[in-house]
Image (cartoon, rainbow, N blue to C red; front, top):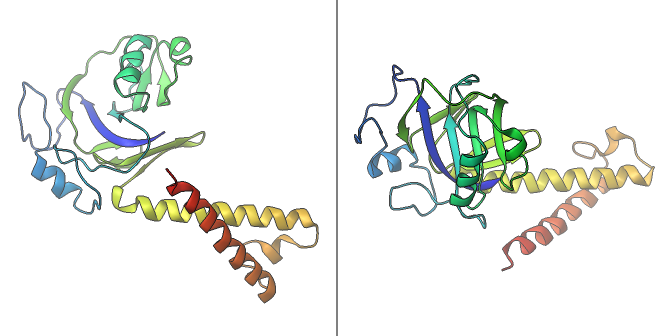
Amino acid sequence: MNSKLSRLTIVLWAATILTPVRVQGQLFTLTRDQMIEYTAQNPFERFPDGRPKVPDAQPGDVLVVDLFDKGDGGTIVGDNLFYYIMKATKGAGLVVDGAVRDLDGISTMDMPAYFRRTHPSPIGNVILTAINIPVRIGNATVMPGDLVFGDSEGVYFIPPALVQQVVDNADVIHIHDEWTRMKFDEGKYKSSEIYGTPKDPALKKEYEEYLKKRLEEIRTKRIRP
């Protein structure tokens, strides 16, 4: 799951949130100027509402919901609403610090989802109070416009200003792992000789040349239309 981020927050009626800046009944959001202030390090273009645009081939927004780890009564979607979100966001994804229901139906649909638990109850004792504001998911503070990346181990939120750095570092780690496994397969080296930074100057030079070659291959392939 890799997409620009839209933010939906659900909190208890009595909970205290950011100072309201625009009132639509009880629905609050940040003004464009506040959005820009909170995401001032964003290097990319912005949507009209001020949210950062993170370059990505995936359309749609990821729905990120703070439901304060609620289980009973904390089911943000069942399979019908999940289907609607999938169509509305073109399958971008859902992240909820709470629960879902109708897992058998949801599991057949082509949209990634991350949630704390499942529960058969309908949602209750909560109210929608804000959209596109900072939220808390687990130990992470998530901002509108953050890039969302999910895999089998969990979900990660990356500020737009750090996206290129994270991608570049991931390339280097991937290539390093690729090279060390290749050297292990040769059956000539101990792990201490090749893992981390190779101690032998000739082996270190070989790795640096391999790294440069593979980075060029990966990044050339990435920018091709």
